[in-house]
Length: 346
Image (tube, rainbow, N blue to C red; front, top):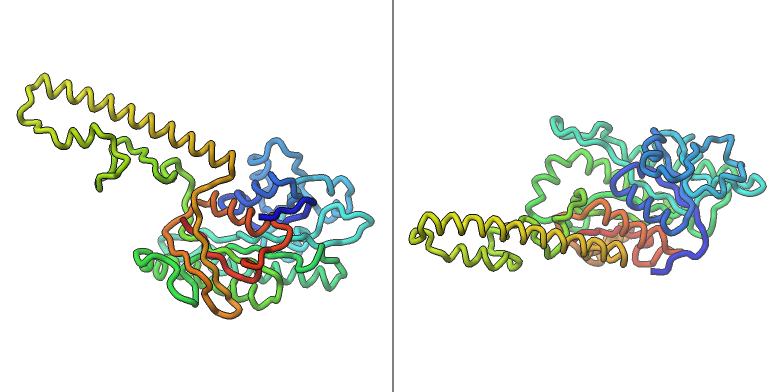
């Protein structure tokens, strides 16, 4: 991956948690300047206590000190065109020249209300994308300059289960996707169609079902301490031996000894598994070699699937890092992803 050697400015809409926050962290780690839209700046103060986080206002857009701030917060809502417009301007531009950011990462979403099978705002993504496109149009009309060719690059997060080119989720997930997630999926479809029709440079990501990070998610490691019901290859040998032992022929004393031995063996196996998990996690962090992520590509303009990747889940952290490393950090958006949709899954 070719990453930029010069500092660029990336705006984030929806980065106070989950996938968006993971992408923001990765982008900041590479030294780029970021602007985050937020309704409650205190959330970011808690997340980044070591950083000088001043809330940007219209009055500070031309403040020279703002140009050196790594993370600028803009207070506002993603459905407020004035707030989004401020978020899209490079802070502290020299000589008062208004310039649009290089990239916009759009990860906003609504809260699912299970009892009603709907969102707290059924049009949260569609209205958010409409507001973003309107803000870009306004800035250009007012004479704000683009930061470079094909900017701003819009990196947008959608969902699997809404492809027009065929099934992109496991069969077992179809009832959930077509039932419980019907309302949010309708919202995502409108959002996608608006972005594709806009003519802007974009790259969309459809992650499979998003889950939180957990040590148990590390592949090849059994942290249960007791193996699996399908005779997992990582099950300790003593459990297999125990399964083959005829307990009816043992005395009471022998049974008690076996019980104590089994408890000790289980504890040792569990501790060993935890050590393996920690070692692997350290290796991943050091080498940025996360779990294997499979990628499928779809061309929404030609309505054609180029490659397929069907899977069950991906963690929010891995999805956010993948998004940053492949769609935000490269100096030029790779042709593989330019105006395409990438499905990512384990």
